[in-house]
Amino acid sequence: MPDTEFLLVCASLLVVAFLYSAVGHAGASGYIAVLTLFGFAAEGIRPVALMLNILVATIGTIQFARAGHFSWKLFWPFAVVAFPLAYFGGYVTLPTHWLKVLIGIVLLASAVRFLITPGPETEVRPPSTGVAVAVGGGLGLLAGLTGTGGGIFLTPILIFMKWSRTKQASAVSAAFILVNSIAGLAGFATNAGTFSLLPANAVWFPVVAVAGGAAGSYLGSRKLDATIIKRLLAVVLTIAGLKLVLT
Image (tube, rainbow, N blue to C red):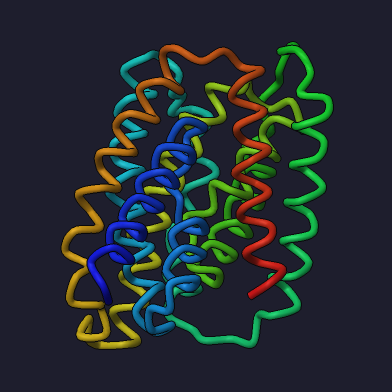
């Protein structure tokens, strides 16, 4: 790959990490889209995206928690079953094309709603433990199957169902992404047995992802108001939705 093209890849990953981390996400769907666009081998893209997800989600979890937005009580029911199911989803290989298209359409519809009517913050009521466990389990499985951390699905649900405020949703989603990405990567490693498929120059990708993730999560957790975060979320959902529909 020519140096100029490689620099463009790094710049794109930096922007993705910044944009996604500002809303409590880690960027897997964006990384996958960038690496696919630039012609990286398909079998190496998934583990790269998950590893970058782990780095950026770790930073996001810390930043949003330090800013006082994280709720363990809200988080754990979503994560407890999601972790093993994300591992299973990362392990298996299924024909998920139509599932991805359907999910992509839902994400695009969510993006339109956030973009047109972000809406004010309202009173929230967390779901029951049973509902949260069931929803988290399903999202964990989707996370493993799609090679993402699942936050792209969880955040809109938390906000639309009025289960949490925007920044708390971002904080919980960052932690949710972290555990699911670890599980998904472990499942991939168990199945693939090797990481030799990673591109040789991927060693630089964590550097730009960490830089973008640190800046984005700091702004999202401390500086940006809820309306701006919802509009940024609309952009993130659009990128993720188009990626799922078109690939």
